[in-house]
Length: 166
Image (cartoon, rainbow, N blue to C red; front, side, top):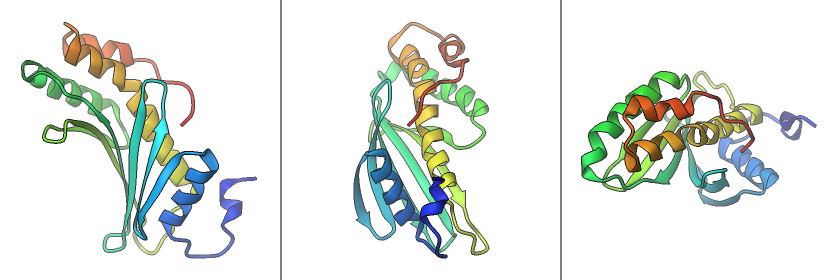
């Protein structure tokens, strides 16, 4: 059964769809509010914290996927250079580093302007892409931050696409 077959009526709230997907995939989740949900998705390298929030104002479903990263101060310039290289390869979403929280962040926004609804497939793909991107670039980030690799050398480990599923 296709994911959309579960939703035959119109105007299903995107966070309700996310909650159904989280239960379907057996991810740990917490419905924070009517407009927001947080979950933990197990990857190969680590467990990723994923939060999705719906903004009715701009009709956007925002995804934030985070994992901890606490680089030494001497590695920060290289980390930012690596993030620029990584983001050049990301067609949907982008990485950033939140230094105060010591979190690596992958962000993506699904714009549903004009009264369009997000489908279960779109949301499932969005979450899967976030995890796949985090999995793909995690080793490069580790090599940059904790190894003696340049950003270009560290990125070489992420040349191949990650395989698997979220």
